[in-house]
Structures are given as C-alpha cells and as structure tokens.
Image (spheres, rainbow, N blue to C red):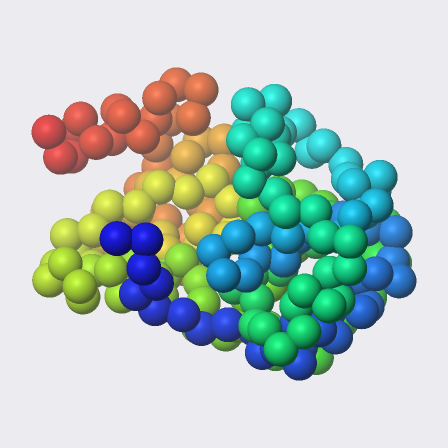
Length: 195
C-alpha cells in the first residue's frame, strides 16, 4: 500500500549533526528520508564505485534526489538510514566514532561503506515485525545474505543461508550455506527447501 508499517528513525538532531560532519569530509553519502534517497550536490566527486553493477547504479541514480543544501533539507527530520562511502582509515575512524558516540546501529553491505540506523532498525527486527504481521514464526522464515548487514536477519530465521560468496560475519550468522549468487544459490535453496 506504499504505507510505512513501522518506523524507528535516527533522531532529527543526530541526522543534522551527521550531515554537518559529513559535509566537512571528502566522502560521498546518502540520507534516506520519507522513503526517498538524498545526496549533497557535489559529493558525487567522492563516489567510488565498489564494483557495483552498472544496472544497479543506473537504477539507484534514477531514484536519487540531489540536494543543493542537504543540511536545510534534513532540518527537523529523522533519517531512516545514513550510508557513507569512505576511502581512508582516518575517514573511517571519524565516521565510526561519531556514529558510535550517537549510539547508532552500524552495518555494512560493502567494504568501504557503513550504514547507520537507529538501534532496533535492522533487518532482524524488520523480519520479526513482518513475521508477526503475517502470523508466522521464525521457524517458518527463510533468509539469504551475503554481507554483515544481513547478520541480524540470518540469526532470526531458522532457514537462514549465507551465500558462498558472502563475508565471514554473514557465514557465522547463518545456519546453512547456499551456492554463490553467480550459481543461482537462492533459487537452488528455495527449490530444495520450499518447492
């Protein structure tokens, strides 16, 4: 229905402080608000393609709102998610220290990218909420992951699969393993365990 069924946002104050900090660093970042994705104009010069497929990047760019002044756009609003692409260990330390000081939940889908959300806004919490709405238990849920940001979701569901090409945190969080994405591992496991 294109309606939010649950929200737990990074506070408006922390969102504004994050934008102020990130605007002082040579990093690319996105702020997710109101179901949309925002980026600061000019920050694209800091974007580093971490081997993301061209189709993904084209789709992402088509949904991106470039802001002339992101600080004004976020004023008084909380963020659903803050993604930061960093290049150096010094940038990583500054960013992680800030997010950790603010008590945010940190995860990563790619090396060199950190995603910050409010505590309790992670894939495991989301899946738990969805299962409650659907009236099913965690034993009836199936999840697949390949990165550390999938860990809480993999820990929640009984049928949790780490992709063969997944990172170590992902593999430690899952009960089962699946062939790689390139081998259609998700389809193979759905055929085996569901169909």
